[in-house]
Length: 196
Image (tube, rainbow, N blue to C red):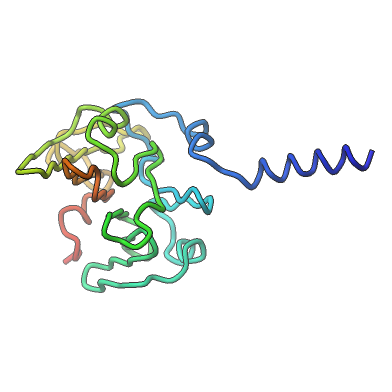
């Protein structure tokens, strides 16, 4: 009887303590080209951490520690593997950059990570983007807005009914390397990082 209890307990504890990319995918079903609240987050799978819009700065720092670098004039705080922008002490922008230490620590809820190519990104986020290409650099920007509880894709911030509920997902893809920069931001941070 003790052996059975120990085995059941061990299985239970291992199931509770391990989170993988597949677990997040099961929790959140995404459709190409349709955005949702969970798109406003990044995951650190190795530590089972989710950093999302609206989180308080104190809650973020309980999860990932103190910033290693701060750009006060735009309220941007760099942590291990991620930068976070705060407005009124709440997350309003998230950045992944291949130049950061531990740049491969975080992924998007759709499983996109630094180094992914253009085709993989489009297969996850869809074709409703603005694309610019120069030399070996591609920039993609998706715009979306929350209207009556649902997220709708829009073509630009000019199309937003309420800019307080409008967001952008911007990426830089280097043809030889893949995704090297990814920013999720609300309208204000996207258009005016200093807030002035």
